[in-house]
Image 1 (tube, helix red, strand yellow):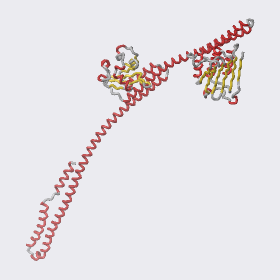
Image 2 (spheres, rainbow, N blue to C red):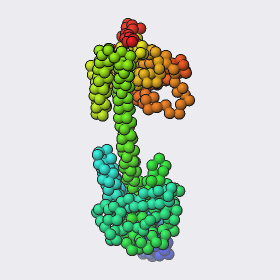
Image 3 (cartoon, one colour):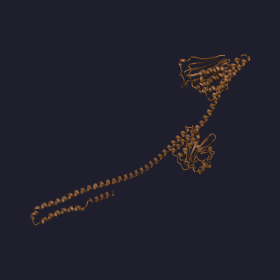
Image 4 (tube, helix red, strand yellow):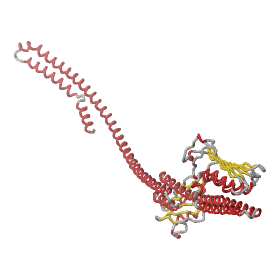
Length: 543
């Protein structure tokens, strides 16, 4: 660009108007005139006279030509100057454009350098985030596997603490449990040096914080309790959330940063998970997300443990109630029948001692009832099906119970079946049989009835069992203690999803009715036959 400028300047100076050009042209014209005059002095005057006009005209023409050439030269010089000025302006504009372009290139280059640095940083962060996500996925998958397997809660908690410490590259982590009612927090587990420790293990070399902890005396725990959200403490030694005792303890182990994650179950704060770093650590969002996710797995483990303990207690209680109900229903009913038969035998012995055959019959019935009750009691212990249902249908088993329990008594008993009998699930048949036996036992023990009628009715919508007597009635609604037998019947009906009602008036008998809805899961065995509706099946045993 500099050489171009110098060339332009030299060209401009070369075409600048000069007096020598004009002098040269005038001199040329003068020389022509001089040559013409010179010929005048030629000795041949006749020649001068004949050529003077030509000589004068030629000199004049030369002068005029010089003037015209000079004018033309000046015009050309002006045009050239205009071109030079235009070229100079163009060069000036080109220099400006070049300067702006150079600035733009420099700026664009700087932008590209910054963009490249930003891109490299984003790539590094993405790779780091991908590693965290892969670690998070692996940790969560492992935790879910432990939760769904038969692993103990200790294994799950150990995995959660190990995963969260290693994924966040922390110094240690601690799991706290809270007792909000008693304002107390205690250590459940500690991860340190590649191992999970229980409280008290490892001695003073492990980073155990001071205990006991009062939740209301710890600002960090109070904030957890209030916000129910993670807390980041990047400068633990200068944070207002840390008490002086905790600060001195942190200085002892060189801990500078911490992340506190609440353990929430249905809005209730069960505890917290604390992650600690020895270097000033800025917790990224994906790290906090991972910690929260793993904390949720710890909550699930604690919940599963709690549910398992409750389920175990409930299972024990349920089994205890089942055995008590079964033993009551078998032994109580058997003993009632035995007592009835022995009392009948005693009555015959007092009134007609000579009727030994009748006495033997009562005693034989009592022995059979005793053996049958003992066998049923043994089967109840092992939660086996009543023996009679293994050989009889439900209606046959109820008919057998009616006959065996009322045989030899003064109670007139009959049994009928309406509708189309069909096979029901084992649980339904067993519970209906036990309810009928208990109701009959109550009639024999308490009702002082003359007759009892048992009906089993099948319909499309339901199965209904009714036991009706004409005894003295039961003041059921006003009794505070309804007895174990009545409670057992209600429990059996509830287990079937049915409804048990007791209707009784003093002096006018009692009616026990059980209704079990006929849902699809109960339709087993043979289907319902509408054509057999209202065809009675009856059994009567009157003494």
